[in-house]
Image (cartoon, rainbow, N blue to C red; front, side, top):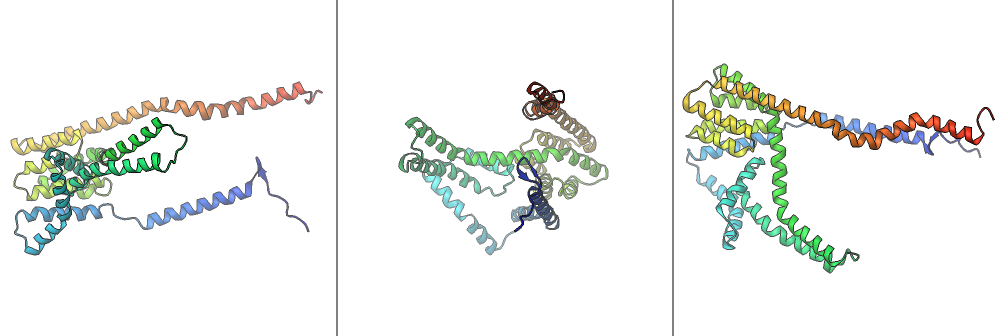
Length: 336
């Protein structure tokens, strides 16, 4: 029987096989991209539902609700009340602590204030659970027999501390991502607010219009502006709506916008001119951050340049010369 001739190889690897695998991976990537493009979802869908719930909640303070609605709200908060009573019975629940966690939840985009007691309960329970898991891993099951007593105690301490800090780390991560997304779209939102103010729209209508226009590009910012527009329409004091916006967003830029809006409402100063100045300032700040990142790029690229690019460059430049010198010393050159 005749054997099929082997295909071309490179460094001992079948080129045809590698090409077939790469072609399959590329085809799967194209199919995944097409599927993602076809099944794209509106990022504001869930947020619009949450805003609708907030609108109904604000209406509940003005319009008398039916008994069934009140009963459903009582059932909804029943678990949170049980956890709260448990924590109060253990003397570990403080009002300042609850308010701090509620603010973190709001800054992370989580609207349910009753979840604050669950976060505090997790701080209390997770260290115990992780500590028991550490005792089982390091002392009972003997999963690391080569570890000494200090390493075992260090691993146990790390697991306990991680269990206590896990809720705060999770919330801080969500707050950072949400704040960065809001910061990116704030200058554009202020430009649109200036246009709406010069067109004669009221403040709540301007916020609602900006939320609709920027909802797809910056869903987090659109969510906050839409909620502010709803609160401006329903709350008795408009200042409270702006204070709530500053409460929900952990950004100094938003604090400045809120202060400007409150002063405009109180003293009747021109809104468009004040927002135009803030927009220019935020754009300059965004440009400065981009220039700062660009200035750090050469220092960041130094390590990859030394480790990956320069060795390859030396091989390409000096490789042929080294081969020629080696052949000349071995006597295999053309003049031998």
